[in-house]
Amino acid sequence: MKRALLAAAAAVALHAQAANPIVKGWYADPEIRLFGDTYWIYPTYSADDEQPARPTAFTPDQQRMRARSDLVWAPFLKQTFLDAFSSRDLVHWTRHERVLDVAHVAWAAYAVWAPSAIAHDGKYYLFFGANDIKSNDQLGGIGVAASDRPDGPFKDALGKPLIGQIHNGAQPIDQMVFKDDDGQAYMVYGGWKHANVVKLAPDLLGVVPFPDGTTYKDITPDPDYVEGPFMAKRRGVYYFMWSEGEWTGPDYRVAYAMGRSPFGPFKRIGTILAQDGKIARGAGHHSIVNVPGTDEWYIAYHRRPLGETDGNHRELAVERLYFNDDGTIRPVVMTNEGVAPRLVR
Image (tube, rainbow, N blue to C red; front, side, top):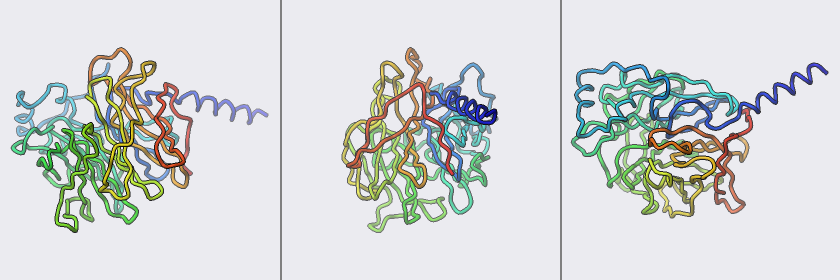
């Protein structure tokens, strides 16, 4: 009887911990992944809270880049590193500080954004945007760092951006790496209302042409596309998702399309995540994950608490994601309670 009571008490305590936001601090753009039996979330460090981040040491070249006040919005100067969070059950999260720092990426100096992580050939690769480039004359873009562990430290794998130019009008930010069933890895990315897909080399450290000779395929799904692309596959169908609206505004939201290949064509079906005047505003820049061997899906996203007016004050949340019988996605219901514990066995 005593053992049963203890087990029941533990179960109650476990459920009591489930809540949104899932962690303390201002974070955004979360990508959720499963490595083995552990969930990982890699977000953007959005802003300081009560405990300011410790300073990063910069090289003279990085200091010169950071001094360009004509190119850099001051809040982005704080974004010089990436933290990560891990959990066995989607409820209890452990912070891993500075899994990536610009101290290990000589060409990056600020605006380190929207990491995308993938396990490949016994290593872990972290793709990230940096420097918020405005033109092809500015150093920055999408980089890739590698580590032997999912918690880093990740170090620059190329010594330069993987994509450092603007193609098809897409600013090189908000990258997401998607590995298809045949093992081929693709990367979708793009801001400024344009989205591209590229084919990654077998070692993930290069971009290679498609059979038709093109390298950057424009897959912008809708005029309302803004940024934050994400791709997933379920039952042979490719789901392309993205964020719409102004990222500092209340109407930031997530829309989606369905297609038969990673290249589309994709046509907007509807909105699956939007503000809720009773919960939070500015809900967007999401990612989703599937529990292996099931049709259970979860969505990680950021949102702005009611009453917050600072655009960088964003917090992380996780909810269940459900599909309809016809494969379309039900609108996500935002909650403060969060999800129930879910172990991966």
